[in-house]
Amino acid sequence: MKSQITDKQFKRITRRELLKLTPVLALGAFAIPALQKPLLKAGLGFSDWVSAKMFRTGHLAPTFADSELTPFPKFPINGYDVADPGIDFDKWNLTVSGAVRKPGDYILAQVQTLPKFNQNTRHICVEGWDVIGNFGGVHLSDFLKMVGADMTARFVYVECADDYYETLDMETALHPQTMLCYEMYDQPLTREHGAPLRLTIPTKVGYKQAKYLTDLKVTNVLQRVGYWEDQGYSYFYGL
Image 1 (tube, rainbow, N blue to C red):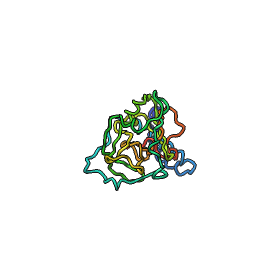
Image 2: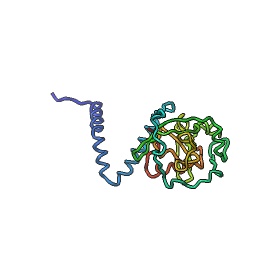
Image 3: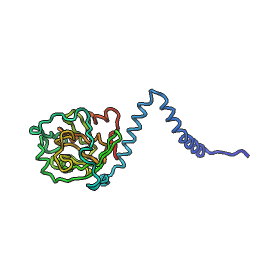
Image 4: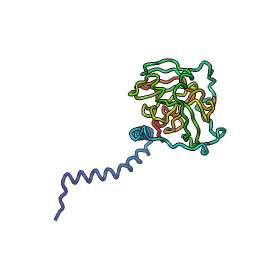
C-alpha cells in the first residue's frame, strides 16, 4: 500500500531538513567574499543583542583578595594613541550634557564628594591578557544621580583627552561595579592609567573602560558608538 503524507507532515519534514541545511548554507555563504563582511556584522549584532538580553544588573563580576592582586608595576599600560595626552590637572573638568537636570563642568573634587568604594577585580584585554587590580572611585550610578540624569535614557557616551570615545548602555552604567575611577592601589590614578578620571567596568572587556575622561553625555541618540566598535568590534562585549 502506498503511504500517504499529509500537508502538515510534509511541512514538518521540510522545516526539519531546512534546519539541518542552515549551517551548510551559512558556510557556503561565507565562501562568497562579498557576503563575508555583512554576515560577520549581522552575527556580531545578534551576539550583542543576545548578550544585552542576558545581562543582569544584580550579577556581580568576581572580586579578589588583596593577596591575589597583580603588583602595580606589572599592571600593563595599554593606550589607544598616547600614554599621556598631557592633561593640565589644575584646569581639568568633566563636561556633562544631554538628558540631565544639572549639565555643566564638574571638577574632580565634586566627583570625590560622593561615597568612595574600592574593588579588586579582573581587567581583561581583548588582546588576550588579564590582570587583577585594585580600583578606587565612585559608582557611576551615584554620579548620574548627582547630575540628575534621565535613568530611562539608553546610553551614557564619553569622550576622552586622547580623542578616544566610548558608549555604555544604561544598564551597564547603573551596574553596582561600574565606577568612575580616580585611584589604583590606594594611590591617585597615574597619567599612564588614565588620570585624572577613567571608567572601570569589570563586567566588560578592557576597551570599554575609557581613560582620560573629559565629556559625559546621557542620550538616546548616538552619532558614533565607540572607537573600536566603529571599526567592527563588539558593542556590548560582556564578560
